[in-house]
Length: 268
Image 1: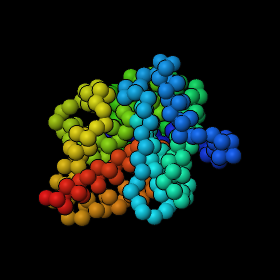
Image 2: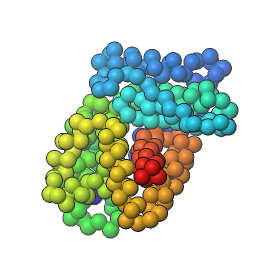
Image 3: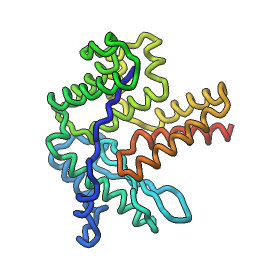
């Protein structure tokens, strides 16, 4: 079992900090967000895909409008306010992303030995409280063939990076777990260490999404209605997380993969 703790990866309080970026201050948050990441790159940040901030507006002819923004490193945020225009939705997404980008610079957000011990401890507590897993399954966290060991392995391989910069790798493994791919690889006798080492160098791209979409098409063909139920749940999760101002990459990727599977199934 792959374990993902639920610490506050995002800024714990939105209201006070958002006042810094209120329109009364005449801050262009869209420009400020792009400049922030360009500055980080200029200062030597390891941004594999460059410093470009990517916006995605949800197609709609009526308000409220919704926009998502994906940051270098993979983190995603969305407009969390009731936005009457597409431009306002873009600013709302940029606002929450900029707030979290600034908060992410705090030393507590950087992956260090102390940070790893803290979040691995949280992961073990989460696993014990949400499952009937035996102590044998959770005791050897140093073993990379176990879920907590794999999580520690990923963190230790990314020491010095911040959590927002680590987000894409984290999302890849969340998706592999959700999709059942990790279980399938384990059944093929692949060690968790081998899987982590392989996917640490893979981007979350269209090829990976397409493969996961094919897996869900196969599930739908085996169990009619499975795809629609999963998509409905994913849409609810994404909407709730967006309105709460949370980081969205995992729920958004889930929804996008399921929408892709649904569209391909309809075409076929």
